[in-house]
Image 1 (tube, rainbow, N blue to C red):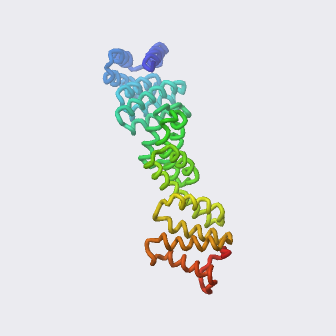
Image 2 (cartoon, helix red, strand yellow):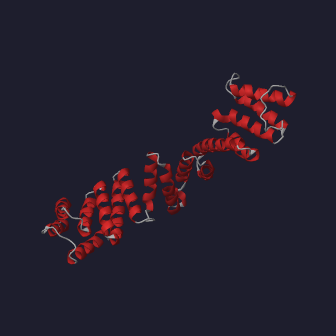
Image 3 (cartoon, one colour):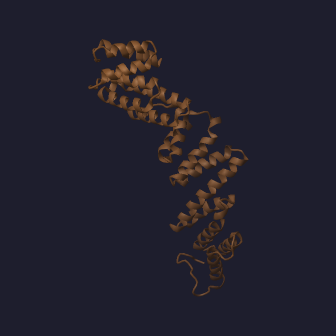
Length: 307
């Protein structure tokens, strides 16, 4: 169908007098009809030399498309559509075809370039199953913010049975951009569908994100909210290297709420979870235990603590 539409456009362009080049366009059309796209491209480029007739440029871009030359096709399509915006539909159809060809040969850069230009020429264009490979390509480039809407678009079009790995990928992308609150939602969804190994991976990321949120909320003076997230970390026991700090933050949040007995137990867990009794965190926990039990003067009790 794409080629049939292109054939109609060729005919319209030729009949409308919108092409030139001392017979180069006609020779290019003959070569095209014969399937000789290299020769057609050469003729079309000759016709386009020195002018920017959109009808000729569309022929040049389409020839680049047939030859899989993404960079050149994208540049010429943009110029052609600038001259005649009504050509955007054909340009986008070609670019989507070009993206699919690039995806088939494993050229993720080509997929990205073709789809990004298609979105530029026609915002909101449907990408179908190409949205997911483009999102993954952007993740490899560490462009997580650009990848997220594409992951979401892919998630909305794929069968439920195929969504499990994508839920994890979306969670990881949100984690990378620092939005742990949204990340936790996707990690939880992934955990509910994953196998045992997947659930272990989800637990690590849930624990890590929950720790970041809990510690921040405690520093912001929101101990009750902090406890909710810190409990998620401690319940999962991951990441193990953060457990001692999570118990300390939990203890301080409890102390701020005046729950002194529970705070003492949490400070004691800091000592048990630490890999070294000589760590500064253990010394701080023991100091806070003494402060709560004996009110030892000179200790560094936080001013917001009620214990």
